Image (cartoon, rainbow, N blue to C red; front, top):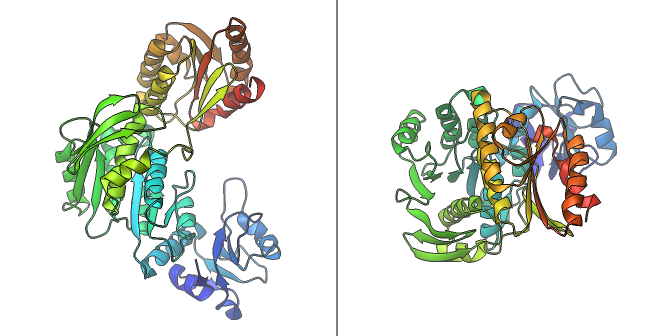
Length: 463
């Protein structure tokens, strides 16, 4: 980023508080007054718990070059651009940066109910071996995180890989109009957000909003095994409504309807069938869900100009970059730390990884899955039934997790919260360990259930 306050004012329609500040140049941006980069623009966001405007003077004292504020909320003497809405102004700045960029930049967006962060990371991993690539860090996938990612762009970057999340309709449309992606991946359509959107068709429509802001020759990369995305008639109907009827669609999956297919799947190794030929793929990350993630990443990278052969060679070295699911060896066995979030699809995928572990005893430590609406009870019972086929012990955490217990056949431990769950699970593992048995534990639940407390207890107290 290399912007004067005059340019930021132009992008946002904001007003510079002091005329002499117009030529002040900012080269980075931050929403945290304690973490300021070189020539930093401090963005005074109003959050649920605090208001960034209280920290503008402190940020300027700590070296920020200027601030982005809302009209009437900052009354200091520092250089600032006052706007009607800081969050919207962040999007305006990001859109302006991309719109005015002179150098070629291939832009990829990744969305979907499950797997978007890993798919984004895999795509960026492949591309980084062939071109200078910037990606969304962690899960910077909302109206704050995505603009902050764009503000990190440098002239040397040749590819941008962004993740786009949503809480309801209109949000992906807003993000895609900032980025204007050349290609977009939709990993799947599950039941996350069903509580707000009502039907899976509405979730499909919300995810397909990614097409609205795409470039003139858009490419959509869709999961051909997903029942909603594979309904090409419905997908095309929605795209027509968005004015994107000419979008190219590439399907990936395991069925004949996909032009990019995985065959002969064994764990996370498979044969990739493409129009360019057949390629053996041996992933270093476990789980059949990563077969799908890797196919999507290979397709997206190919759209950016990387050959299928090179993409396959690269993806086999992907491993340390996985930002969510972590497989942690401990002296008594293995912990699968997947505590960040949960949905029925991701639960199924993670349980398949638990099944693949070479251990004597398998424990599923599962907390509530939230925001499932009318599908909640049925989804919890189905996950409980699947866990019963894989795990010997169920640690159920939270009020909804009692529904897991209804269909689980095995040893059951129930806890009201994650702290109690960790306290109850530790002696159970001690018991198996004392008998000379190796143990594998999957820890997973919706983020609000704070299952990281269980993962931390297992990896710090019993290593």
